[in-house]
Image (tube, rainbow, N blue to C red):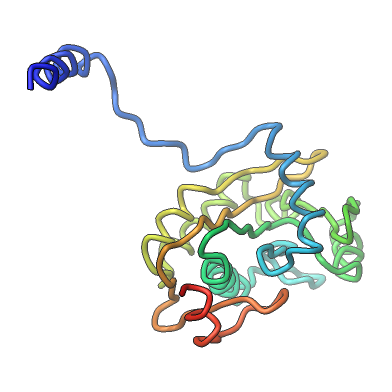
Length: 211
């Protein structure tokens, strides 16, 4: 009891010298580039835990925002969460998983891509420029959509606080980390899971994985 009183008194004396600060929404650093490379290589054998999106715009000569793609990202995050109740997963935005898409991006934007283990790093910088956005505004578009989605808690909150910016050879990639979940996650009334690199609804599989 005496120890507890002493501790409380000490805390009272020092806490006024500290200012509470929210943790940063976006993290970045050289270590993430290494993690990024490793993820691309590891995804070949752990496909369901990883998802790659080339960006948010349609691959057309006059690119515009693809709202359906944002919806698919939310469903995919839910699927990864339900697939890996004891391990994390990732969604990367700025990576194409098809050569034809990478070539299409090169033609539309005049940019080069980087090949890593059957994936094509294209970055989001070209899209941000096309939208007349800076990187922060581009990311805010994703954050706002996630925040307004029907993704269940606590997954939504955890996802929003674990968004990373990866800078890889002058390309900016966004990483959404899907942390391990102890309960089934939903988008509205639907619970998604992953089968290979596809996102689907399979209640029996979700129940089995969480038992």
